[in-house]
Amino acid sequence: MAAESLYTAIIGLPLLGFLIIGFLKNKISDNIAGILASTMVLIPFLIVSSVFFSLVNGGSAIHYYLLNWFTVGHYSVDYGIQLDRLSVVMSLFITGVGFLIHLYSVSYMKGDKNFSTYFSYLNLFIFFMLVLVLSDNYLGMYIGWEGVGLCSYFLIGFWYKNNEYSNAGKKAFVMNRVGDLGFMVGMFYVFYYTGSLEFVKVEQAIGMGAMTPIVLMIAASMLFVGATGKSAQIPLFTWLPDAMAGPTPVSALIHAATMVTAGIYMVIRSNFLYSLAPEVLNVVGIIGVASALYAAIVGMTQNDIKKVLAYSTVSQLGLMFLALGVGAYVTALFHVLTHAFFKALLFLGAGSVMHAVGGEQDIRKMGGLRKYMPITFATFLIASLAISGIPPFSGFFSKDEILAQAFQQNTLLWVLGLVASMMTAFYMFRLVFLTFYGDYRGNDDSKQKIHESPKLMTIPLVVLAILATVAGTLGLPHVLNMPHLLNDFLSPILASSARPQGHLEASTEFMLMGIATGGALVSIAIAYMMYISKKRVPDEDANYSGLTKVAYHKFYIDELYNAVIVRPMQWCSEFFHKVIDKVVVDGIVNMTGKASLLASDIVRTSQTGYTAFYILAMVLSACFILGYFFIGS
Image 1 (cartoon, one colour):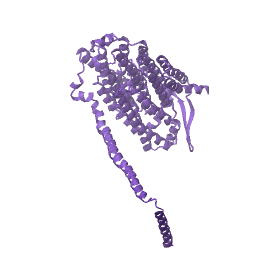
Image 2 (cartoon, one colour; image 1 turned 60 degrees about the horizontal axis):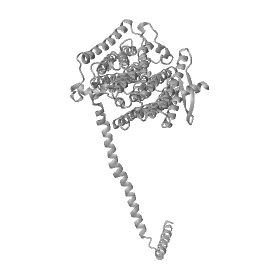
Image 3 (cartoon, rainbow, N blue to C red; image 1 turned 180 degrees about the horizontal axis):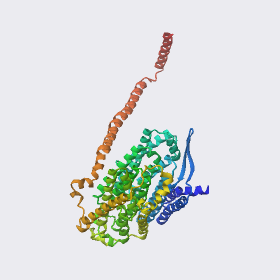
């Protein structure tokens, strides 16, 4: 029982932190709020680490029921915690990266009047994210799924007095609800045909033929709709770039390292379902590579430092879905891990840059910052090399594995994935060169104030830079004759689920690595020639033309959604308000009232007050009643 209490603390402590800071925010100092919130994430990280090492040493997964929610007939809905190899890996980087971002936020948010509220929201987010990944059933996962969406709304619109930021929060909330509806429908299908929502029981029921191929396809498709919303894939992706309105640490935590990977985790956790629906997996791969290409093209034209990273996130998530689409579940999770490190580092590095230049986000007004911010520059460069797929950094290994798996399944998907990766290298080093090289292009006042960030901000950068460098050792290529540590660790859960891949020949694998690395280096060289050798600075927004203008305006997808979905809904709501509500509904209500008044006026005239009239009315009434019975008989 003591052990179960310890494991329950993994999700309980962040919730406790939210409650304490939320209720006592006016009675505790900002420093205490920051320390308390960070501690409530650090302790779960240490507990999960102990479970991880236990599993590495051959220990058994931990699975126990925490509470009974409700009972309907013979069906009992329980909430259980499942600390198996997959959920432990997810929990490790949620709490580990989460702690570093909490630490960073203590300095970044210093002086904000809602400092304590911010940290209470961060703790609440960590709580719901852990509920999502540690639940042993779809219903518990759904509670966490909705919870992180709610926290996303709170944190994106944290500076709610700015209407643009507030609208971004509402947009994220609404678009996620669309995807969540798909998740709910898929969950209903699973329950109806298997009689359970627990992952183990659902897998057993499916193995016994409880779901026909058509039903499997429908359930998997609906769950994938939920994944496209949460993980920002076509067509439910437009909320993520706007979500950059929130504080930069929020972008690092929610929209780079954790929440947006929830869709990936859900598909991996449901591998027993998707592996029996190959048609849906094909769609997953196509949507993934299309999202990766689209976001990469748009990312090459953006000038807002956070918008570039936002579209980069959509693109990298697309590569993860590409891996899922070819049945490479471990590979997808491998990229989730490496992406968590280098993308969190990129966002925190962007926050450090913005902190130094007075909040400026336009990279055209930066330049030469490496002289003033050596730690930020070095760590940002490491992250850029990692995401570009340059060896020996972590992104090289996970991207190479995705492309190799795609090559085995579908050459076209491999080519498209390769092109998206090359674009990634280009726009990331476009960002690096415009931000850190050349001469400073901002005004003189801001130039005088440029400085390296405080240690509470740079220490997380250094730790993440180390992780972004060495994390690739978790999945070394087969051609090197080295163990794939992540695959070996997860094989008891996922080995039987992936499509049979086999291993490429050594010459083919080296060729693929050479093509991917060469393509990335060529892209970096092109960016160097454009922005260092030729000292080119992007034009003003109004000067864009042709395809560049279309890409800069995100292919007008937002405008299309406004024209096709938003405005018709507004017109319908206005019609129902002005016609149905005011004319029909109000008309019926008003008519009923007027009819009552008219009837009361008529009846009132019969009340004369004369006794003779009342006696006459009684006699006539008696005669009528007697006549009715006489005629009837």
